[in-house]
Amino acid sequence: MKGAAILSASTLLVKLLGLLFSIPLANFISAEGMSYFYGAYDIFTIFLMLSTAGLPIAVSRMVSTAYARNCRKEADQVFSVSFWLFFSIGLLGSLVMLLGAEQIAQMLHKPGAAGTIRALAPTTFFISVTSALRGYFQGRSNMVPTAMSQVIEAVTKVAIGVGLAAYIVSQLGDDTFAAVGAISGVSISAALGTLYLAAYKLRQKRRDRTLPPDGGVVASRRDMLLSLVRFAIPITIGSCFLSVLDFVDSAVLMDRMITGAGLSQAQADWFSGVLGHARKFFDLPGAFVVPISTSLLPVLSGAIVSGDRHSVLHISSISMRVTLIIAIPASVGMSLFAEPICSLLLFNKPEVAAGAARLLAVLATAIAFNSALLTTNAILQSFGRTTRPVVHMAVGGVVKIALSYFLTAIPEMNVMGSAISTVLSYLLIMVLNLIAIRESLPDMDGIAVTSMPILLASAAMGAASYGAYQGLLLFLPQRLAVLPAIVVALAVYGAAVVLFKAVTYDDVVMLPKGEALARLLHVRRKFRPRHMERRLPKVNPKKGRHLRL
Image (cartoon, rainbow, N blue to C red; front, side, top):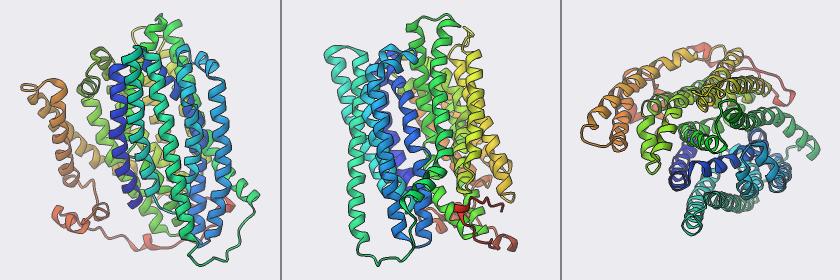
């Protein structure tokens, strides 16, 4: 949780800076121009997942396992092997995006997106190299390099990307070139983040030379590469499968809106850009759950290897509960306040804001499902069950495409069909993951037991904050009244989670001055039965055995 706290703090800053990047662009670039911006990201995400989904998790897991056995030399060789693998994947992805930009744009039914795809091509290489470095540090439970590199990328992206886009709009008045300028800022920021991590790794290497050598036996580079790939491939395929489906979904959406719903190319581009804005806002709360899943896997893997039943149950349960404590109120709040939030963030585009709010109100209900999906994926991967999340995501992805195909062709529904299909697919994947976790952790608290007090606290928060918002509308405009309403929501939710016992003593004591805070809030420790303290036999993760605790 310490690692999650570090990443969460950096994520908060990064997301605030991300708003400073995306909101100005959304307010001075048309929805059609932003459609090209989001179109470049659709193809970029495929290569991003190819290089960052499974392999960094595999690196993190192998490094943490090596350090658990006090074999530093093995951990260093894991990094060396993974670095050159990531380097090759990143270079290949960059060349495909650079040389095939026109063909990709045609496949997306967005001919104007070719320039943004080319501008984003270098980012694929830098992100791949960055992933190897971040996976290594996360395996050592050092989240500071990841956090700092994220901040560096976010700051420079805002300064360079927004600056270039604003200059192009003022000088040329061309939204397409402005989107290219904004994307160029993303590539430059990714390069700077990679340079920081490389410098940090060199400094870490000099520090490690002062440590006494270990005498552990290290596997060959070939065997290590095979182990890395064997663990990573199922995760990568699953993540890439979803990314490919998102790419297909975007193409299907454009095609069905034009051929099925009877919209023009310009109208379809506009709706696609509006949906991109709604998805951007939808992703904000879920991003705070990523640090939990990132920090969870190496720690939980170490506990599983040690056969420590109490730690495995404790880590899994607390990670799931903290995920829901963040995600459920986010779903409630963003769904309730979708209209004023979009009105505030898209202040210069009232029509775009109205369209995005309608979509966000629906998408927001899936924030909790998506967040739970991330954490349950990490739990299953920690147990070595990498194939199950892949199958579940594939099933959810196919359902999403099928629903989107039929719903978006309905003229009255059009782009709303994509939002509905997204909600239902995330719900399905989450349920399948929870069923799989029950097989490995039958003693883990059920999702209904964990979520019920959080749901009650979120309902109290929603009622109080929405009432305050309606009262504030008598004195303030809509987009300003939402800000104090959010403050009310935070205050009420903080009190409600304690009142409904949604947090435990263990949750509170992890915070700074946690024991004093627990006494102040009257949160008491619950004693665990003796049978929960038993230890399990150690398991060799290389043999691929699955624990049932």
